Image 1 (cartoon, rainbow, N blue to C red):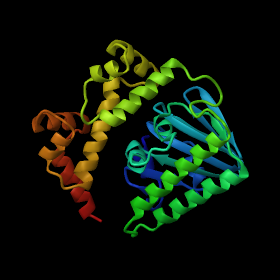
Image 2 (cartoon, rainbow, N blue to C red):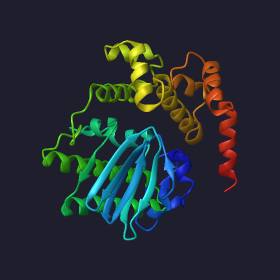
Image 3 (tube, helix red, strand yellow):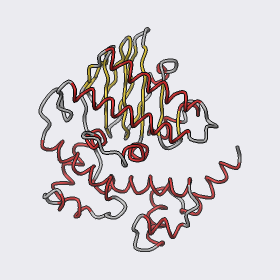
Image 4 (cartoon, rainbow, N blue to C red):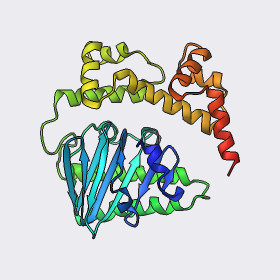
Length: 296
């Protein structure tokens, strides 16, 4: 399932719809047997251990360790020890960008663009800081009537990323890869994703990205497809679609203006794109969302 689908499996006090999901020690075991794809996952293990499967690889995370994963293939939560005490934080691209775009610490781009992340050992002191921030986010999420609920959660997430970055840099670890040498293909994927998250609204053509990366479009397509199971266009499309859904659901921006915001040549082209990928027109989708809201 996607992050959006996973959010529906947990109480609303654990998430901001289409933004972030935080799962604490009290309900972490509900993840056993679940599979999620196309999202960022931070796993923080305080006590006990848990095992996840990514593709054919089984990864075990023990106490005083973190796992930071940015993946497209499904990650399955296989098992957890009886004494498990752990947190799972799942932010999507939109929440991450909203939280970090106006703040550029030395390694924020690395955290946003990471393709594969090793297990990160955490000292008791660092673990205490990280867990404190997660608890503060959990408290804020639980207060669904708080006027600044989203903004506070973004602040705690930004602090979480900064503390994690400081922890790794202070240890002298190479942020890109602490267990081995990062490959040229991994660097290419990071570069491509960084460009997409910066230019997806303005640039829909793969040739733009391949030119910026100084490679052929054919080579870019081959690497992206082999590594993350999607074509470069599919990655761009998903970013456009996610932003379109947000603007239709959470703003009153006219559809013509949304089309212009996402740099479609005309509103008809945007409507065709949206209907092809969501199965309904933008106006029908907006009406369906308003009907859902009105039913509460």
